[in-house]
Length: 322
Image 1: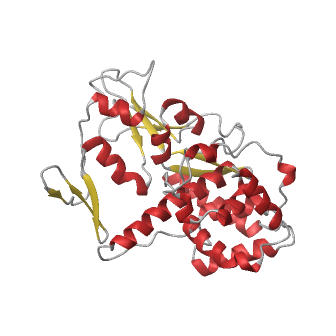
Image 2: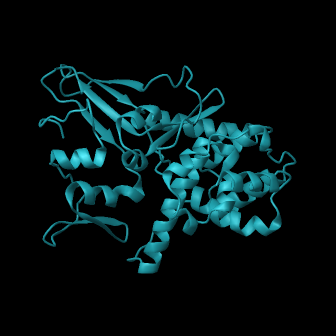
């Protein structure tokens, strides 16, 4: 894989040949474009295509998070269909190469092409796209920088989760003072000031990789942040610590949209289906549950949690935790 990517990187170092333009447009739309919403039940072919594109999006963004220099070569090398045969370990192995062997086109042709595709395909405001352009083509990005910073400010103030960023990638950037730990937020419920609690959000990628298995790292969503010109990703995991020890601590994970069905099946043996824009649950016995707003499922056997989340060794489960 690495040899193929380095060959492509050399081929596009002076600009992306026109023979690749259509391929690049289609695959960047998969990586950065909005997911299509249908007002009808998708056909089997549409469902299969959507599944392929979701998996490809995960891999494309994983490579971008890990090493922006390899992103364009990877997108050009692997179609959504080809991504179905890629293993996570192959992506994790894309680290050991000489970066001086990869040169980025600085003439403006590649940047102009990607920006044109972004406008045509409607993802010019996508934060992951903006972060890539700023990282690879930093020159003359004042307007872009303002856009990214504005989006980042909204993200930090409102804790908006980017649903398309997987977190199972390797270190995006070395930790600095802005990444040294999770974000700390103190909340005081209005109805009872006595019940103070502390909320820790935006877990470190290294941390979830140490605690969870590869499957869970793959399904957890992520938040994009930027500080002092550096863009980085943190896992969309939040832990709430009540002041009183008799109350349980609660951990919340934001699940990547394409993985919700798989995780619901693994934990609760239910099937998640969509009817138009409405998500429904098919429960054991054929019962269909359509929530008015939200529907909560509770109660998972210990052995299932161990199997799905991969807790081993010193990580012990307690009956009181859900």
